[in-house]
Image 1 (cartoon, rainbow, N blue to C red):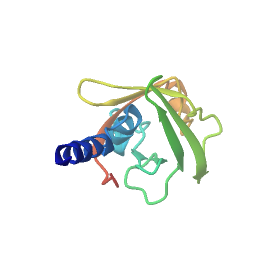
Image 2 (image 1 turned 45 degrees about the vertical axis):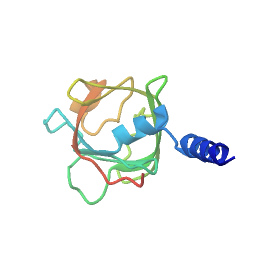
Image 3 (image 1 turned 180 degrees about the vertical axis):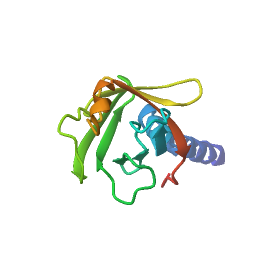
Image 4 (image 1 turned 30 degrees about the horizontal axis):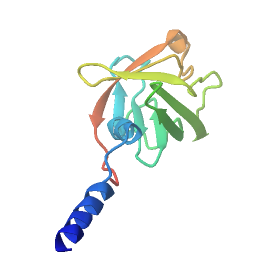
Length: 142
């Protein structure tokens, strides 16, 4: 009887331990402060993803007011990042951020394609892909 109780307890402990899902791993990887690898005046200064599903974008790094912010979801199977703008002071009318394709380079750069953060200056019109480097990881609640 004791062996059955011990085995049952062990089984319950083993099955109650949750393993990370593809979604949680994808979210943990993207959470942080990113800056565009292109250091020209046309680059995005900060793209911040938080673990609560919100993001913010700032053209000028370390600026207190963000250009725009909103929510995001990740589809790790299809490698899609969906952003939705909910607030901002300078929201480009031509932004198409609802269905980016995302990937990571060998050096862990975040590569976003098939979307557009919007026209901040006329030179920015030709942007069709973005490469971001992680500046630092944000503390998560996990």
